[in-house]
Image (cartoon, rainbow, N blue to C red):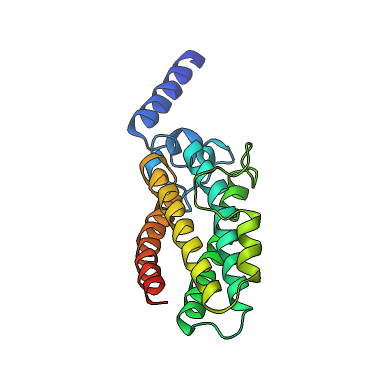
Length: 203
């Protein structure tokens, strides 16, 4: 009698597993659909679904883009403290800060949820268009048209680096939210690069 009950139980369990109907049995069903993301469906206490929601490219992108965005905000703050600037420069700096500051918070939350450190192991990568300390000091000291030209030249290169990083994430990343942000960065910053080039030519 015991053997009959055992086999019946095993048969039912196998049928449920094959049918993919294990609605409340945890990670086995969740892990069969990695493309769906978290979507509020994470009933399991296992860390596997969260880990499956991102890959190394996502981590590298977010860890690199946070300091990249932070410098864009810093550059914008430098300009917004200056007086007598072309109103178009002030408007651009305001727009860049308004867009990128919230994205820093968003990306920081992603790293926290992934249990990943805020900084990449080897520090921020090169070739991403970021200003060095001397460039920032020159921007801080400059005034008027000189400051505007330094800002535009620096931010064009800065945006170019961000677009490059975002395109790499689009092609190599896994996390849908990070990929969506990357696509938004490419669209908005490529448009701003053209805007800044036009502005620079008019000064």
